[in-house]
Image (cartoon, rainbow over all chains, first blue to last red; front, side):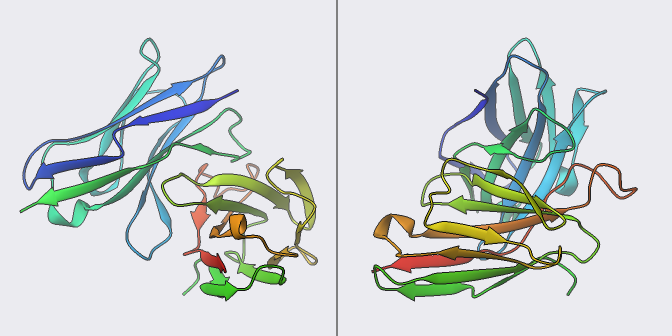
Length: 114
Length: 118
């Protein structure tokens, strides 16, 4: 069965520092990978996705992620953290593009230290 | 606001009571999904509709749960004889079908309906 593991339920970084949120997946077939962000009292919002093609994908708000098949990873990064990045981030996987029955990770809460 | 709308946003009920949540998707989206999110967990898939047809149900959706989308527009999720374990955030999402020109693979989520069972 497909699964997603997010390492670190809480991550704290200083403002201006690199953000790295880790996501690993388990799959026997090529996955489609997503990162969603959830701000307090708001719905989940898509940050970026990988379906096919270029393995380095860029998303909104300066985030990007790289699909590494050999490592079964899809880590999310941002070069310089901003206070507004404080939120919960979810990695998700689908194995059937066109049927978005997503399997989500448990989430990583990102705190930005002023 | 043309986003996904969920009502009520919060519901507190006593064990054994029935509750119903409503979801209004983005109007041109023919796919509608229900997820459940408990504290410290990511969203878990419950069921999804394409138009009025319910195409898949998770094993998480016990016989006390029923979801409908009678006219292919809004959807309701009813929980009968609520239990304390049903306390969670119930999320609704919508998307266009893959054949639609606007399809991107993205799910558009509502803000959720939080259920507390006492």
